[in-house]
Length: 425
Image 1 (cartoon, rainbow, N blue to C red):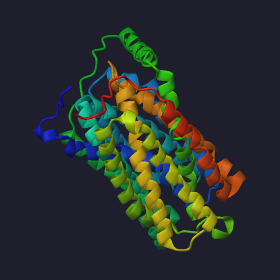
Image 2 (image 1 turned 180 degrees about the vertical axis):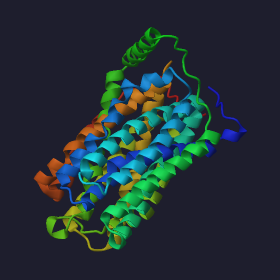
Image 3 (image 1 turned 180 degrees about the horizontal axis):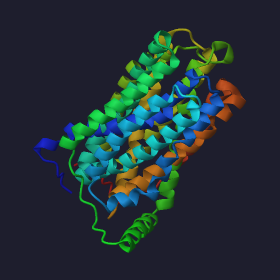
Image 4 (image 1 turned 30 degrees about the horizontal axis):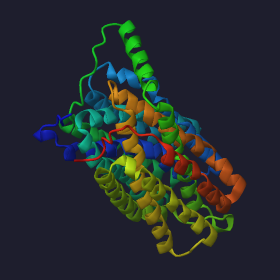
């Protein structure tokens, strides 16, 4: 398949910004909200449960993903959801000073999650329908890098600013400003992509409700008819089991008082650690992982990617047992783990993109697979707070290392198509 971009829409002009836009609402819901609610005095168990519960739309998106194959264009849905997301973040900011802010803010996060999940389906549809397999492998590193850049800018720079503002203008106003910034970024990107984004393929012609149901059923049926689909599903669920538990607890561990087993870091210090060291490490890891797979092929690379993805999780056990006061040690640990995260995550994304998604309904099937993958992230996240409260931080991080074992098993056993299409010529 040839790339259908023209001179005005070279992948370099839209792949980075598209996945930066995809990352912003996900990170705000999954991670930044954790730090916000910590500052607003919720318990660790409450935070882990609530901020994971509102993420269900990323798992349920197959229910409406096929609809995006039926109407308008992929670009249309990308622009609309970015604009709506910007407005939703503004409303979230306005909800924070209200009495009963928790239920209002969680409701807004749920709306943002549904809108963002819809955006992800369309954005991935543009990517896989516009780029050739070789270009997919070439740009998957940049895709991952800018997705993570959104995470680290949000969890790093903006959290650092929020930490400073908490001191000067108060906790509530500080987080109102941050949620407003998220909204402003999405609004700006919606206008940019209205000019730069390729169409990403026209939708199927649907003339009646009966046609719509037939198309929906065909999307579902053909997904589960794919060869070795159940083993592929097991791979994309279990690959992220340990990561799902770490994501919620690590920032809480860093914020927790030292007498409670945490590192006692300020919000602003966490922002610096992620914003400078984390972003650099992840970008380098993601780009390196993309070129590593493009050269070797995914089948030959997958177990190595799994090793590099999981083993660096041990740095948090080290931090929990040593409880260092040296900020450089904490930053070094984050650098190691995030480089491995960026390098290894390329594997599961390319597996979904090129082993599961190909076929008549690339966008919808990619949405199905990434929703299943998110289930492997979300369910461990929901219970991680309870596990951490029960075990304590030291034993929790040891448990996470045990939880990496399923990832190694499925990486060793996962089947591949006979032709390794990811490998470049």
